[in-house]
Length: 118
Picture (cartoon, rainbow, N blue to C red):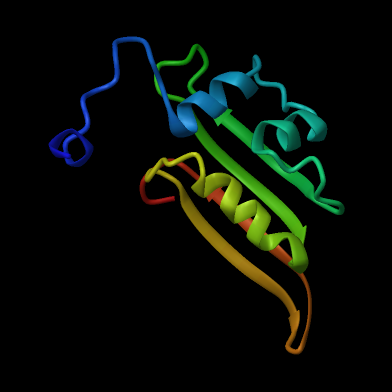
């Protein structure tokens, strides 16, 4: 039980969370395709997802920084949020902006960053 409360550090060279996700999607300044992003986040079944902004800094990767914007139908907002939460990385910052006037809310814009203060 004590090991569960005090997990051992990761072996050298092993990454998790946002760094693991971003290493798979980092390109030399090029944005990965929408299908690659959806596959990496497990959102293949989500219709209507748009990614107008995807910026990864830190190439060559020492510590990759992500700034991305997702536009998602309101019905899929929980799927987008859960996909990042399942990465189990506390470095993600989210800004969620609901678009529409209640009770008719159509879209949400989710700005995701893994850099502090952004």
